[in-house]
Length: 136
Image (cartoon, rainbow, N blue to C red; front, side, top):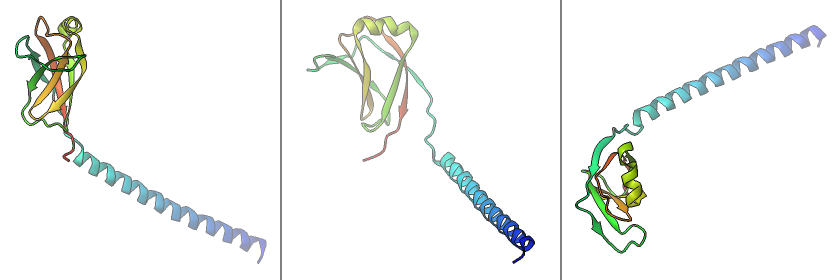
């Protein structure tokens, strides 16, 4: 094989390889695009915040030694598998600090339970979001 024929053969092989990889990259890009579209269709709905107040009445107590007082915020449709995120309004920060409000909460069927070391002296103004959990 002559030097020129050899170089033409290498060039043709390189072009074939380029075309082959270009088609693979295009196929991969299309697959990724399709997958992202499917994820957008099935992603969790964005929830809106709900404003609420935790009053000074209606609190209960149990044997929890750190946070013996609790209040159940009624929330239709919430389950124990869900997650609630609660944010205090700025006007309630000092009240929460004074009553020793627990930084976590728990979800139960139909309610979000918040705990505190003592019952607050004034209502706590909050916003909450529910993130739906997976069913067992």
